[in-house]
Length: 154
Image (cartoon, rainbow, N blue to C red):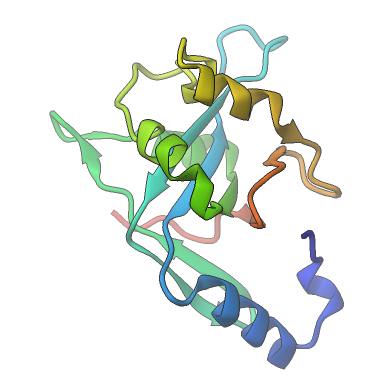
């Protein structure tokens, strides 16, 4: 389902956000890796369990992104700082294995969607245009929010 929040009143946005985010699911966040080769688009997909709605007017979501070993930023943080866009998905129950697999630590620029694992490759084939948003979304996720970074706290 794709909804343009700008088409809704604040009270409607509140109900849409609270009814799709509670009980607290895992945020499955897609960001664009800043590729060395600008011809190829490549995406990072990672799950985050610390995730919530913050406000409905303006509509704001919050994800908490920890650090990699060695106290370096995770790819999602790097991508949000440089690209300022993300798609926050709420996965379907039958996608739990893919969500878990996408938590793997990879070198920056390596996409979870391009791994040798066939289940993850299926996700790459399921990226679809997200109407009015520069990043794609995962076709079979029941909820996807096209987000612009509002603020990053460290």
